[in-house]
Image (cartoon, rainbow, N blue to C red; front, side):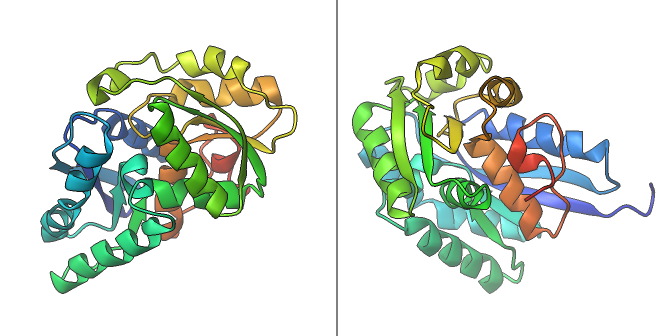
Length: 252
């Protein structure tokens, strides 16, 4: 095991986010039980307390600083851990953001690939071959509508959605991670190819992913599962981590 490579995982995180720094490491730690690679986790924070359009725009402007800070420590991959911030900036913005932040790391001599949770969710759904999905989100309905429009612009129809309408980002992070197992029973999944159990990196859902998938017989993902998958792909690593849904089965 002493010859195993260690990777540095950097995360650009909203200041009030508490979930991505728990769920993403949890999946990588589970992976360590099956593979020799090891991982360390490092974060830089952008100020954001309430999930409103104005705060999200101000927060996104701070992401360049975070990328620079993390590149000082020479990350192997960076994750931008706020899905709705990216999606609220305009259709297809994840490509612009990922390219710009990668350029910041390269200019600082610490070039690293950048994954946004928004881009990762789209990438994960495409990897699963999903054309129609149902989603659960904690946002107020107008922000959920932005998420739906963004996903549909990427060629994936959102057939049904639930908005929990929680504006306080800290409160979102306090939600029971097992709650999506029950809440998603209210989604119409009769004509979908996949379910997004949390279309928000702050809403905990990791323990719910596999139970929902087992109940529905459909692929189930979340923003954090998709982000972890995309990070593993950028690092050239196998993506088989059982217990977290089809996307991390190693088949994709």
